[in-house]
Image 1 (spheres, rainbow, N blue to C red):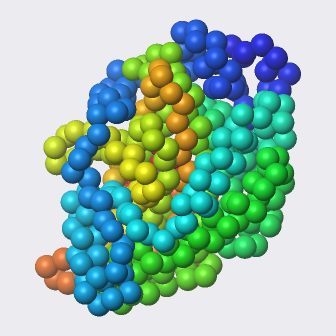
Image 2: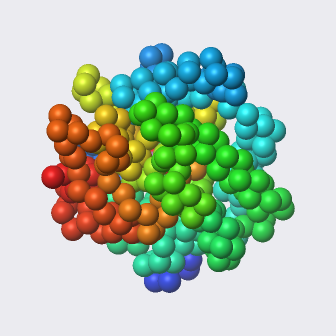
Length: 360
Ligand code: OGA
Ligand code: NI
């Protein structure tokens, strides 16, 4: 079922089965492809916020005392939650606002205009898509999205055909945001390294130093007539190093707290950034830290935006548990591998959690 006018845009060269924004405007019952199975539907409300997810101030990071506090707090948050928020992180509020404005302006463009940047089936998932980045996906999520390869710089330039020129200023803003986020990621990887008892530059070097990759994903979750039957984004772990997420004031990001068997909603805090660990940190830390399972729920009142920066290793990085952390009492729980092979190995094993494919 394609909305009126969309049929002509849906051809085999582009991955836009239907525009979720157009479906949202029709407010009709959800097409079958959006219906999640009973066990995969939302349980916790989008606005029932969990007050316990750590919120860590990075103020004082350049002083010895401040850094010790931050390293201790981040270490605890990584072990107990795998997700936390940071404030006083130094990312200018004006830049964060500009990113939100450009993202909103892009998604509000007519579908025909957004289609100029549409994702191509079979290729690396970059560009604009609606419902899913994969043409053959059996289930769709209640979101529209646009993704960019942002770092290293050679990737960015190769990808510019998928970077909107409309709204004016979009490209420059994303470039500035990408570089700013890269600096924050370097800081956080330093703190996480030290919290594991490793040298500050350990993880940064392990993931390939300046060759490490960064992907930027902008999500638009329209209001949804039947939010209890679907998800904005299905449950998953992020396969990379760490993720930095900026969200608006609506709420919808949820993490699974395994020891409580409970989904908890991350509270939107103005100016804060959400940090979650990816699979590579769980593996590098030999499961001392967890790559948290998370999802996005939608609601019938408001649309929601999230701006997501993924820090990933370079494709040639040799990944696995850090040898410095291993001992007779703490033997390696995972095999080592080249990062390029990580997802293919995981897909071949079809394990529920990607990293389980590497368990020794
Ligand atoms: C993601 C993600 C959550 C959100 O894009 O990987 O987890 O709230 N997004 O958009
Ligand atoms: Ni995610």
